[in-house]
Image (cartoon, rainbow, N blue to C red):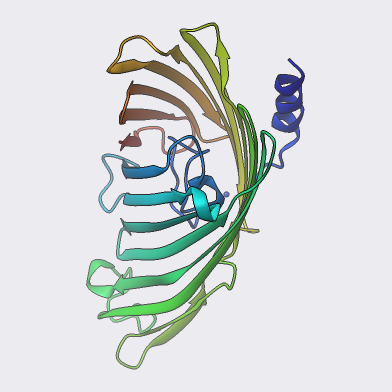
Amino acid sequence: MTRFLLFLLMYSSILAFGQQDPQFTLDQDRNTFTNPALMVDDYDLKLQAVFRAQWVGFDGAPVTGVFQGSYFVERAWSAFGVSAVYGQLGAETFSYTTFNYAFVGQIGDHRLIPAVSIGMISRTIDGSQITAIEPGDPNIPTGKSTGIGLDLGVGLSYMFEGLLVGVSSTHLNEAEFLLDFGGLSRSYNIARHIYGVASYDAHIGNHFRLKPIALGKTDFASTQFEQFLWIGARNLTAVFDGVDIGVGYRIDDAVMFGIDLNFKWFSLAYSYDYTISGLSSSIPREVTN
């Protein structure tokens, strides 16, 4: 009960943090591309694939895919992993791949896990996909250009039984991209993002679980806060562990629903966001396994 009250205190006080990084609904407390320290949990080997479609029904709507893999080496008190992200939004495509390392410091049941990530990030603009209001506008690119930069990140998590608290920063070095469209050059920096997440996995009896999750993020231009609650069954059979049903709220943006089928060696989840912003006719959907 003390740990649950501690979680509620942190849950209500996390800063309301916003989207240059791709946005996801599922597994916010296991998302290693936003916090490499989250590689460490109850499993030595972790493989995860995520697909998300936002603003469904709009031409050029965001589509994002993620692959994450990691392995915990107990003798070295370390976890090693990789995160790969690819997405498209209108005329822009982006990708980044990072290699992640986390060290597990443990005293009793308490774990403090610092982590770092290093990789490459790229942005491509295809001017042929942009329609100018005034044909021939010199500020509208007509070709395609790609910028590539170094990408650094850091993360920290604290774990105690079912409690998890994590803070992290992606794009720590704010890489600069130079895009050249045949004489028309543009440069910009990818914004540094700060994330905070807290969750508590409460096991009630032998066959019931309750898991609230809170997430805050900012890129210092916009902020966003969301909360999600999973309720489900566990330890049902030797193969099928149980099913979780979730509902959440992203402030001023969406009401979120999810279902997660858990087997002993893998899980399959699906989410559906009912948008309450001005894009209310769009329906983001997400699948992860």
